[in-house]
Length: 139
Image (cartoon, rainbow, N blue to C red; front, side, top):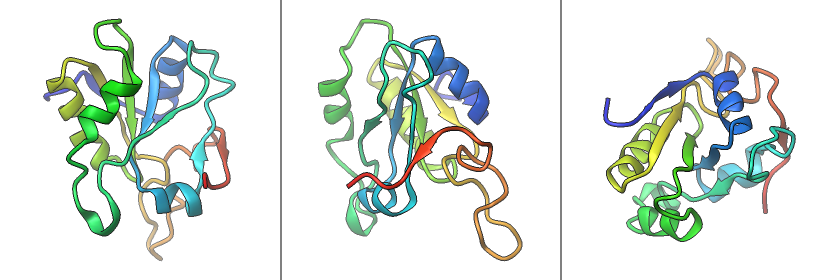
C-alpha cells in the first residue's frame, strides 16, 4: 500500500475528530446532485471538508490536483488527510498522489455512496448509508 491505510466511514469520522482533514475528490456534479459530507460536528481542528476534483468533467484527470491540495493544506504541519470519493476507488489514487507529495493520507473504504445493490442503487454502505452526516448538494 502506498498510503497510510484504509478506513471504514466510522473510522474516518474518528480520524476527523482527532484533527485530520477530509478531502472529497468527487466531481462538481456529484457534489451538486448527490450531496456532500457534513463534518462540522466531528470536533476536529477543521470543520469543513476540502473539495478538490480528482477527475474533471468528462473523466479528464485533474493535472493540478496536488498543486490545488498544497494551496489548501500547509505542507509539513503533520495534518493527516482522509480522502473520499463515490465508492473508494478515486480516493485511493488521490491518497497515493498526496502521499507521494509528502502528506500522510488515508482512503475511506466504501466512499460517500457505497456499493450498488442488486438493482444498481447505492444503498448498501458508504458514508451516507452508514448514517454519517451529509448535506444536500454543494453548488
